[in-house]
Length: 387
Image (cartoon, rainbow, N blue to C red):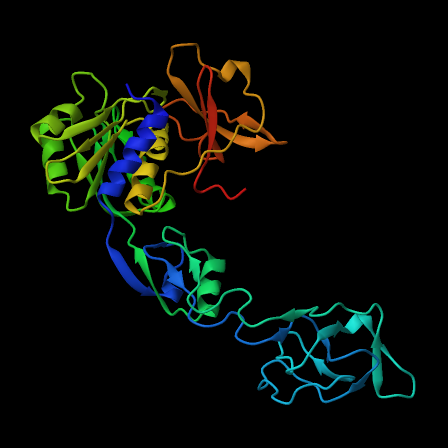
């Protein structure tokens, strides 16, 4: 049995051995993708000296004589301001050469019977001026390899003059649900609805992959081996058949395919019966338990680091436990660590109900996964949790 922290590292390293394809895409189509190369600024950011506030661009000491206004979008003035001169400026408007500072509108004092203004309080030199290139100069690296292109990142690239970027394509995954008992939405006696296949495309998308195709296989060694052999993706994920019972064919199927098993069980419950293997052609197989919660836990603990490795990224970060773990949640010494679906309530972790290995009702409402050992604990934020 492998410790869950070690399993995360093994999976991430395996993913890095098989990086995904690199695509060059327009910035507008790159949302949520991972950069495959550093991105450098193409032009000064901002491109010219401009006002950070509505107010007056001034030179020298006040009071200042008023000149013509400078509006946002206007051609940058070329005539320098002379000492004692002021020109109204809008936020984002270019400031004239020679501008010493910008007086904010609310700090300006108009002198009676004079076309002049003063300031109270007087601004310091250079106040409220965005200097050309102060955020980034041409050639500066603005985003590094491995960065996820968030909405602000896309805005940064557009402002930097970048039109296309190199990104790692989401890893393609084939999913195979194993089990004689699996059926559709109206099961007959003795059979159960397959709940993993409908959730797998969105679950994989949440961790950065894309489900290319799904399939089912019976609890037969030959059937499982054939389903894995037919897959055309670098990563194959299966569910079911990972225990050691007489109807669990995954290990025999992997042996028939001459796969090298890297992880055979994790010291964790639920989800401990997972396997991770490399096929002779370099593809990898992650075999999850068949119970729904156990499968979700296994995918988050081991499959997510595998996907991130393929994207050139480290395993997802772990959060510190925000408060003491309830004593009843701590496993006995020597027993497997426990994965507990939780929410954060008042700054403390609160386990949700309904989280036996065959259930989904609890994890469907959870935002965190606490992994608790007899002397260790960590928290994984669920990838779909936004609060």
